[in-house]
Length: 200
Image (cartoon, rainbow, N blue to C red; front, side, top):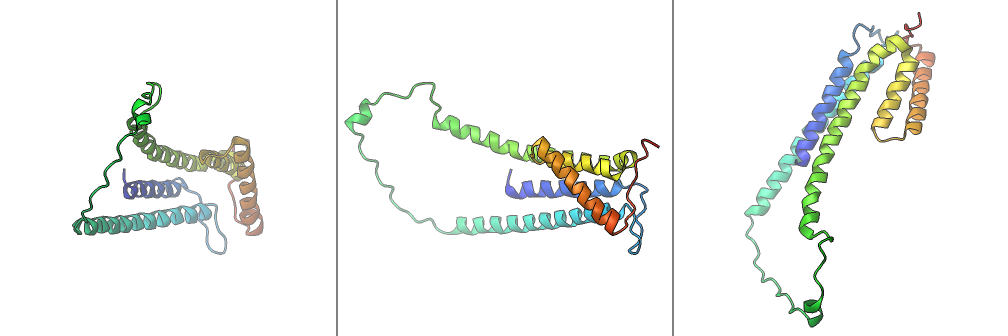
């Protein structure tokens, strides 16, 4: 899979992530510039994700076009012929050296294993993106049940862990980011955030 294809798949996945965030808001009020509603911040972030992902896809297409045209120009140039240096004659020590044992991997075996590992990387990235989409889509019903603090702390911690963070670090980062956003939007800006209805 080429770099351009991977970039296009990643950009499309993030566009799907932004669309899922917009659709997952449901009937949450957007509010206005004077009195923002609980849907304003997720709407802005989801729209920003869509715009950046689309720009990333356009850049990937342009880069792939330039790379393919550069390869075509290079292939059209006449090849410079040069005589390959002859290999030196093997020495007596090389001829009498013992052959490698069967347990040692050969060069062919080592190079054959590389495409498998390289091909597994895009699949793992797609699974992480799909997990992020599921987490963000589940945030809206969780926010209605657990409130902004509980749902956002769980979502942030899950996203951080999905990115490769350790569970303890993911939990601390999720709680810290949740408190920062709550203080900024809920306290300083006075944005009404979802409250817990599970215990009502």
